[in-house]
Amino acid sequence: MFIKKVKLILQSEDSECGQACLAMIFNYYGYGISLPELRKNHSAQTGGTKVSYLMETCTDHGFRAITYSLTIEELRKLTLPCILHWNFSHFVVLTKINKNSVEINDPALGCMRIDQDKLKQHFTGVAVEIKKSESFSPVKPKKINIHDVTGRVIGFIPFVFKMLAASILIDIIALLMPRISQLILDKVIPDHDKNLLIFCFLVSLALLVLQFVISTMSDLTKIKFEAYFKSNWRSNVFSKLTRLPVDFFKSRGFGNIMYRFKSIDIIQNYLSDKLSALILNVTSSIIIAVILLSYNVELAAIVIMASLLYSVVRFSAYFYIKENQLSTIALKSREQSVLINTLKFIQTHKLYGGLHRIHNQYHGIITDEASVSAKSQIITMIATNINQFISGFRNILVLFVAVLLALNNEMTIGMIFAFTAYSVEFSRRSTIVINLIYKIQLLKIQSSRLAEIVHATDESGLGSYFDLNENYNLSARGIYHQYDKLAPLVLVNINIDISENETVLLTGDSGSGKSTFINIMLGITEPVAGSLFIGGVNIKKTGKHAIREITSSVLQGDSLFPGTIYENITFNDSLDNIDQIHEIANAIGIHDVITRLPLG
Image 1 (cartoon, helix red, strand yellow):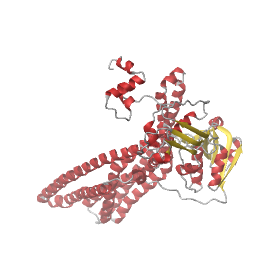
Image 2 (cartoon, rainbow, N blue to C red; image 1 turned 90 degrees about the horizontal axis):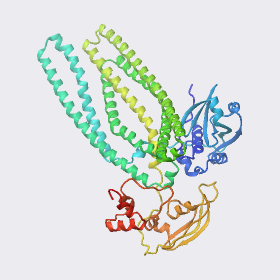
Image 3 (tube, rainbow, N blue to C red; image 1 turned 60 degrees about the horizontal axis):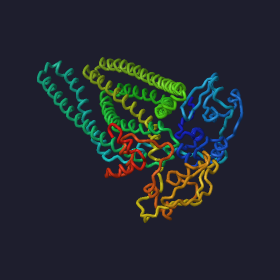
Image 4 (cartoon, rainbow, N blue to C red; image 1 turned 180 degrees about the horizontal axis):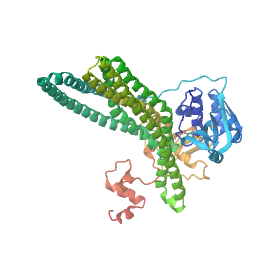
């Protein structure tokens, strides 16, 4: 019986576990909304998502949410899937209740099975049951294709046609070889025809040389295309990444972003290398299937049905492998974040004795990774062994039927030999095709993750060069700001004028909005309301570049960049005059320190 599964959706931002849980349940009930779409209208709360916010979001999308305070034993009374409050700071989706355990979709860590003891440790006693309301209407999910993240690839269509032509020629040559073997067995040996044997030898040699030339040219074409495609696409995605607003990076861990960027390598590998292999093997499989049918329809049906049976076995495990791959991605992103933060703050961890805790955290993550990987390997191993059994049974059945046909004088020994060679080759090629299509389906996971970067909205209002007539006064009028819709206002009706060369000191308690206001003045953060002026001109007209051209800043978290002192002083400015560099170094009091260095 078919059991409907809850699609795992991983959170992208650190504080959007609630939104990810809602997206999972919405999709389960046929409301196909992605996490980025949900985020547009219902962004995550900075201090953590409240249950009331989840209920409000449900109402907006045609659902009804009911909150319960209950014990673990009472969870069986709830309609699944439902949302559980976890560790007092997180939300997960409860998908199944077993006798001694439960299964959850954790938007941060993936699919997990939790025993009763761990459930008692993590479950806070609050659950949210979600059902369709009278206003519910189903929505078809928007599919993300590989093309959506690659964009237009120049030269891709000619490349495909070249690979297709090469694969057809190589296949024709390869498929002629069994025919030559059949000719030798059925004609040369019985007739003792040496001239025909020499002819077969020369033809085989000529075909081998031709195959070598075509394969070499095909591989060179593929290498050139890969080099062009990989460098250009990676560069384009990096350029897109640097155009995103700062808030995009603040709401995501470095490990998360880096692992998304690595999706490029995985997708590129399939598009350039595996795609050509797919074209080659699909073409071969079709041609060989036609040849098999030309020998004997019954025998060909056995071979083709065996491959179809393997495809059913392979794709029946797709959902479980997909879940495991999503869990692996979540764990690897988390592992990378822990590693980066440990290296970044190693001094602090050493001083405050935090290394033991960090090691336990890291060990727990890689242990979970190994467990998830083992599950995937077991499923793949079972599918592979079943395929081997199917192949073995097919070979036995083909041989049995072929011999019966030979006894009835419907096939010759040479025909049996050639058919067997073709059937083995068809099985090999079709298995490759099935596995590649299977992996391309899994590739959609990487595409959707990369789409978070590629489809993200660029930083707005940058503008271009604007002549300020050397009037560098800055003004703010009616500035209001809050971190999210339900958060209190951190800045209320701020009005300030800062003249050129004027020194202004902002004072206030921690969390009162000093850094936020500076970020607004620099164009890093968008205010909820209000306007900024530079030289009396609204920043919307001048663009943010105008402020950044005339200001310099050292903000919280800034540090020296890898490279030389010269590069750190000049940064993006091209100061060719070394006297200017010395003047700046003197002004900030580091010139004498530099000159005393061994390589100063």
